[in-house]
Length: 564
Image (tube, rainbow, N blue to C red; front, side):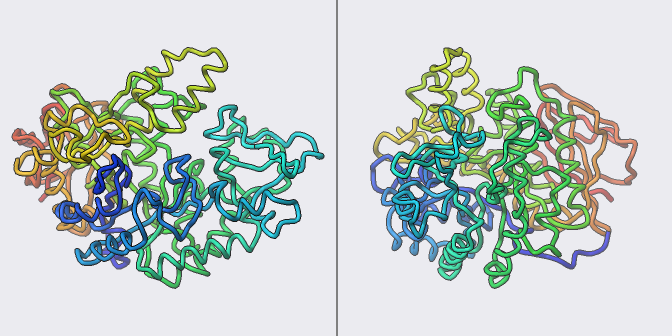
């Protein structure tokens, strides 16, 4: 492979995602805020990360924790003021970091002025900012909603005797991108934040923005899969290209699209540099691995296999081998904690599986995204009662099941593994009451294991802690371009205990061996040649390499070698 020529800061950076409601409360009201993040900027800088991705802090009624935006140029009072935001941005700049915001423009809040005006009259100047279906045309064709109790994405509005479309909550009406005025509004919002100094956007469900405004019945070829249908709108790429031309091309910024429903066959349509659309996007193949095929929130009854896990990552790496760029993540605000999901959060294996997963993300090609608390190995909380949950997704699905007479006990058992609230519990700063997050009772209960070493204070000065392994691995990635840009080669696809691969850039060659089992395991790598394997880092004192091509791993051991 030739020396890298197309280097970019957003390819080489490590992203740290902050859910502001749960990071640090500076006011004592139990809710995280912008000044709380400011207080923790030195800690964030100490991690070695480069880019902060901040979940929405815009003015919002909070039906979906800020993903229902009422003012795209305002700050949610719970989080602070625009002055607080400016203070945060200045602090980020002073530390040489970059800030990526959420761009939520598939839908707005129903309390946004555009929608308030749109619903007043069929003749409103804002009527065509949203998708309306007049009731005299009968019941609109079936559209599915993620958060609607009845699963119906059309909501009847009596005032104008019409239905409006909402792919998510009924308080999140879908914006009508087919209207050029809407697109101009969005581009102006983007320019507002870029001119402030923001370095990019993570674009919420950006694959859904284009709709067929004839609103046909779901075509039979989708076999009932509305997500794939929503992500295949007729003018999606026309809009993304226009966005690039009108806005993105004028700034040195990073874009990552959330793209449910987008498979390998369409990947380069979004990120091939020649198309001038996005830098990268989040696919959902891994997030669906342990879920039932047709129900994205229901956990599989059988255990996922490591060979399946490998195939997903290997296939996506191949998709971007020549063009485009990938993104790597194991959890975020919408999915459970990585160590509980892909590792083993038992007392015996928590440390090794948390550090093994960190090693994995930081030795793969593609920009790595870490979610707050992942650096200290935060785990799922596993609530027992519906009253403990705050997420609209869990609460509304519970009501749906209750109305249908379903098995509520089984549902709550499923949510222990599946709920989004698993990933939203307050950051665990120390072992004190409320984990150092707030002086008051937090908006969501703190995980009790913050008193058992899963907190920053306990790990800060321990050189072998999960936190300090993270710091070491971030440093190693930055010191070795081959771990960023090098080609990837999977070894032994069918080995169900060990994930092994090489990364190669010119004469640099690295071997990564990851144990995904709670037992000792051995791998014989007869398919690669090397004279010497020099250990770069391990999450265990056991060296693993026993000589020749034989490597013996302890449970959940992770090793990175330089091959000579």
